[in-house]
Figure: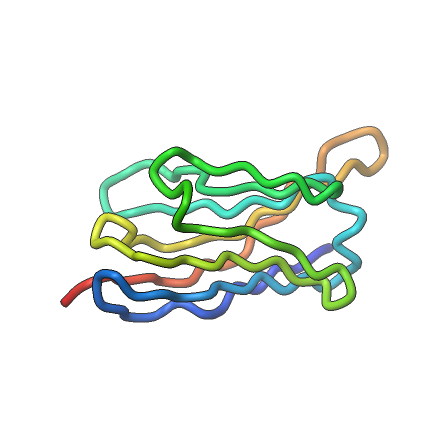
Length: 119
């Protein structure tokens, strides 16, 4: 069983920055994609950013130009650098990793980290 542990959330003022980390208990090279999702109160969980095993990132339109996803395979960690934060970025942020094992997709989730953007 793979464990993903998020960290780095907190309270930040609008315009501020945070860097989230997602540390995996195994080699992340086995995961063909790792995503960051977020869920605000009363809203559905939303895919924010993804990075493939080939280091190709994608972003939801609302965070393009402000958020950067990256991975450090040596540390088995994926990061989400969040700049120019807005109140609407407030949510619990979750890390999700997918790998193919025994011809099925295995889906792993972290416990989430709270990000609050407020003055």
